[in-house]
Amino acid sequence: MADAAARRAQVAGGLLILILLPLAHTPSHAATPARSSSSTAAFQLQGDVYPTGHYYATMNIGNPAKPYFLDVDTGSDLTWLQCDAPCQSCNKGSNQKCPSPQQCDYRIKYTDSASSTGVLITDNFTLPLRNSSNVRPSLTFGCGYDQQVGKNGALQAATDGLLGLGRGSISLLSQLKKQGITKNVLGHCLSTSGGGFLFFGDDLVPTSRVTWVSMARSTSGNYYSPGSATLYFDRRSLGVKPMEVVFDSGSTYTYFASQPYQAVVSALKGGLSKSLQQVSDPSLPLCWKGQKAFKSVFDVKKEFKSLFLSFANGKNAVMEILPENYLIVNKNGNVCLGILDGTAAKLSVNVIGDITMQDQMVIYDNEKTQLGWVRGSCSRSAKSMSFLP
Ligand SMILES: *[C@@H]1O[C@H](CO)[C@@H](O)[C@H](O)[C@H]1NC(C)=O
Ligand SMILES: *[C@@H]1O[C@H](CO)[C@@H](O)[C@H](O)[C@H]1NC(C)=O
Image 1 (spheres, rainbow, N blue to C red):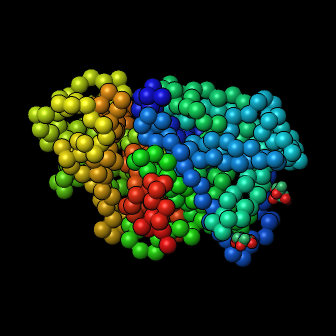
Image 2: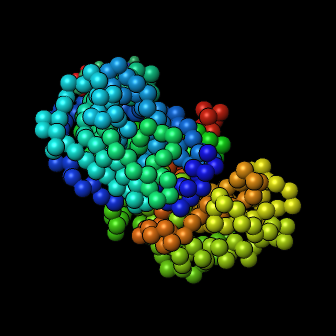
């Protein structure tokens, strides 16, 4: 499994770059009357940054419902799962076949050149509401019959597909909103110790302490972007010009363009004691070993300082990036930098990936077009999470 994480190290797996056959013929639910009250569906997550390389939710789909593990991806819109061609196992019981199959084809390509090709189908999803009842709306998603692994192995991981939670109209959240089931708000809480939770709807959004920033129009693609940020290390400006960032839970690691990346690397190196030695390690481009093998980031975090992103779109809107939000300790007991060179990975934006969003509730509010975050433990044992009502 370490290999999966290492392969993912080079990619931002979740970034959608294009859908070749657009989704104009997607069955529409626009005519469904909106219910007066909407609710919140919540899901436990599994997975971690290392060694799994992604966080995933179990979605129960079909009649009768079958469980599928789907990689949570706020960096792309289309939900799809691997199906047997020509889509026999994934729409059993559904009476909503494509009226004209070729119009329902899709092909989606991700920035690392991974892709999925298939047909759009509609079937019932079982969504657990917080009041312990289920709703079973019928939602449109992709039934993929041809998946190409990216240059670096993304989409090869042990999931059944991808949960597309981006801003587009094919996104599950847009569909749930159209049907009056939940508001177009989602949030996730990814734990540093693995697992966490995901929710659709706004009931779990804390009423205070959240740092909010207006969503900006991303200059490349339809990403969730809090706009431009200035980068600080240990409260000192790193002297790089403000950089546009996007939040993407489909990316394991964080990617900065070459200039801020190099600035971070030299600032970090400058602050380290002699007890840490740079080593070459296949997991990630930059790793250090200590006098003894480390067991967790918490054994070594005192050697490192926080980074900060200060956003122009919000009043005093700062995201602190603690050492555990940019470092991993791998199976060799080395500590490695989980911020990677996005220019080298041919990314056109700076990507805040899972590693940096851990142990904060991150909220994507498409109703008020704002993004928010609030720090708190996301571990399963913290059921009474400090920020939950
Ligand atoms: C739970 O909430 C939904 C939507 O608000 C409602 O339709 C349903 O009746 C509720 N179920 C229970 C058991 O209260
Ligand atoms: C599946 O969804 C359709 C459309 O929303 C609904 O009419 C039907 O009752 C759902 N099926 C089940 C088993 O809940």
